[in-house]
Image 1 (cartoon, rainbow, N blue to C red):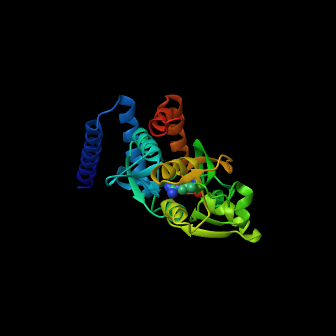
Image 2: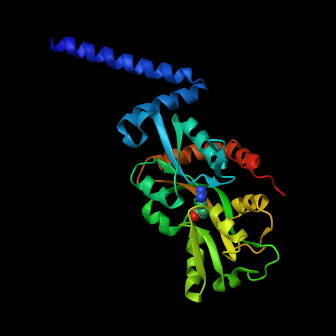
Image 3: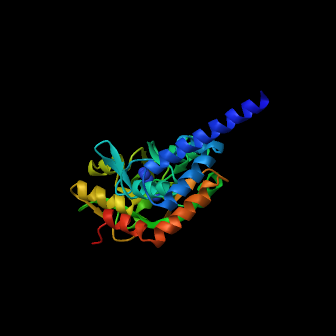
Length: 272
Ligand code: ARG
């Protein structure tokens, strides 16, 4: 009787394994893809943050060209890089859109497996989450209204009303100026800060350079100051101590080496 149970269990286990293998084989891809997919399925059962063979990415999808909506689909550099990473690791990517300042909590609590949102590596954030290797650089820039001369450079921010997206590095940098008399208006979306600028409610917006270019292209009468504000590096954030960091780093390395990252970035950022 005992033996019968064992045999049954073994048959069941084999059946489950075969179904999984067939499911993944059906997805196509090279042999190496298949083996990594099978590996990660086994792991995902033990690792509840990556249940169902899915990896959830927390982002704030109002940040062109990194993540933004095209219809109801989230596209952009981060979305495509994340998809390439997930393909390599054998997971299906699911993107969860939320406020930028909720991303780190979502990752910490395991609601999301990783956060990718043009997120700058900072020492303070490193206290809360782990960062993978960086995948690109960025610059914080200052957007002003064309023809207004209240803010001509970073120094003038000290006495200005500044719009930022809440919880971003732009917010963190200009918060230092509050002591000098700067007023900070914090918005949930970068686009709302830019709208406030167009309406003359703030004197300047501090935000990452590529989204800044997109906003200036979409809104007449705005300009980006030449003087860059801060240089930064973007990385993916993962729960502290998670073994995903190493896996993502492995995938990132391959995607850097084979030119995938470069070509995704070039697809969205046309050098001028
Ligand atoms: N790089 C800035 C930061 O990390 C801004 C990122 C905002 N990203 C977004 N998807 N809204 O704080």
